[in-house]
Image 1 (cartoon, helix red, strand yellow):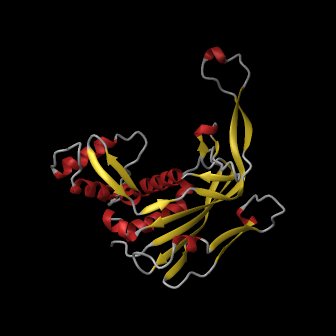
Image 2: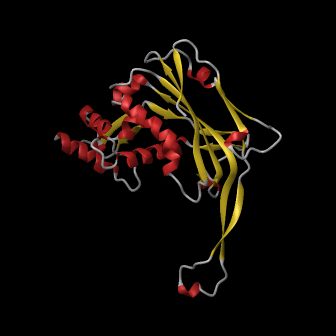
Image 3: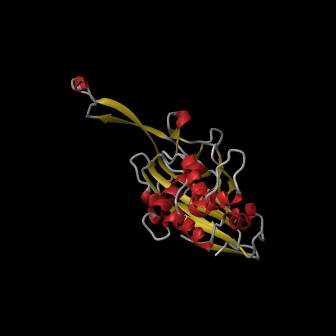
Length: 281
């Protein structure tokens, strides 16, 4: 069923003794706003986790062919475009992508019909603007990244056996609560084929994606709160920025550094007429 309502959403997630999103330009330290000291997690990072969750959940299912992931590690994108041309019996062209080709890619790749994609490569798949968009997540309070020294007992080569233990560094945030905001456009969803079922899969991904993305670097991460604003129509009944302002998180005891989600209080004011607030977790 095609999407009939506009949505916005607010996701609160936290990290304990981990690095939620390293910055390669800063020695993989946690991303940070240098002016405010607040931590950042990129939209690309969050979309990657959604992709990974969908790929995991739909692997081997009856509808797995319609929930494939376009942007995967080591993917050769031209091969995926050529697959669409072969399936439809159309000759590939560099200049333009026939509309059925782009529609085929939207139909078979969940992340294309969800987030969109620029597929105008040598084998042209067209360009899709996705209905679902994320903003950068930002920590509620400034973060204090720490570098922890670690040691390695094993060596790579026999000639290094006599050496002392090698030292390394690990970057962590002791604790931080992050807030991410996002948008779901019903008109764009109808253009890409993003459906109500796809939306439910997105909610499930936002709720559960951290449970399947564990690593030593990321510490303990968890989705803590997810609010969605459902409009009564496709174009919306209230400005997104006013809806976002209805949800806030504040420290229970500002005098002490937060070390858990219980140190915050998340509140949500009533939504205006024509908008329903859904508390999904």
